[in-house]
Length: 465
Image 1 (tube, rainbow, N blue to C red):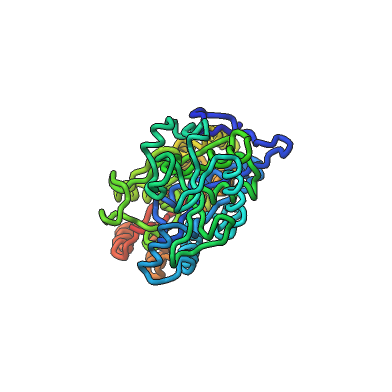
Image 2: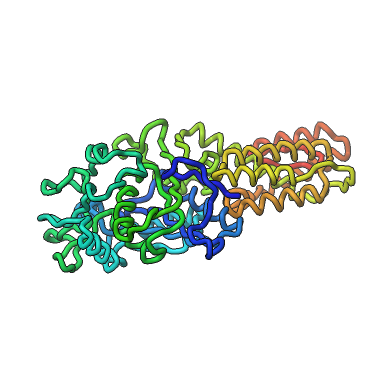
């Protein structure tokens, strides 16, 4: 029974699809990028988490349609394009390509459809029109705005009163002609030299919040199962989505389950280019494996804050090495058949899936994996691991890597230099002949090449220092 933590109710709830007639069909929307710059580790944190969630739900038999928008028209895009002296469309397309490259680099493959805002102008105009006709929107000199005083439950997701919402107005929707400080723009009338689309009210472009509900209404209808995103989007962005769609449809709730990821900081500080701690995904992947980032993200609960430090990354590297070492050992086939072995993988599987079913508790699930690693290493050292036991562990790890994506995915066995392999063979020959001094000399020569020999009951293993 899958449970999820719902930001809307602030409770842990059993996951049930909105439309019971559809069985295990789930519709999930996650806020995508605004494509004006390279994506950073904060973005990676959210998208890796939801990639894991979707893939896990699929292993549970859910048929998940994962929709993600791409904001390709926005003030930030227009301003950055002016700085660079290029057209906003050209800039957006370039950074969209970079974003998709980053997703491939992180092995994020669960997204069913990417939907650009500019491909859904017709749907956006339709929503603005209906909000005007229903009295939830009004026109002023620079655009059409949503009147938050007309929506009775505004603030229910973020637990803000209307007054608190007024005090937290977004800078991008600041306008002297608004009725309420918290009102937000649905349609911005065009300025000279800016991209625009024709409408009955005049040429313009969409506001930030309206694109998401226009896109989700097209693919999912007025209500759907899960909405995900980073915690900093709860207000005003997700609050605005609720106000828009529930006002249009008259149906509540827009979304049954709201899932939000925690913040990612760098050495305890928010990422900022001015502080010099802004790490893009592409820069991280130049020097590190995607496996490292996936494990770093997933060893923390998706709702918890994460602090990126070099010490933490080094700790994750060590954990990844432990996993790799275990797999190397398991893939050695000379384990003995022991009928009296009491080891059973079922205990670990049960505890693991129990943790995952409890709001995708990856920290607990991974602690069970490392318990399994300790137990397996102990069995190997005592020569008590059977061939069947090794096979069961490998099969379990391969199965869970379908959603973790760092155990086998992208794992490459380092090529050991010929000279080291030759010295290792010579050492084995000396050992068999009880020529221990020569065996030790061979070990020291191997060490000078940057490798160590580890003797186990399953055989000798060469490790890079």
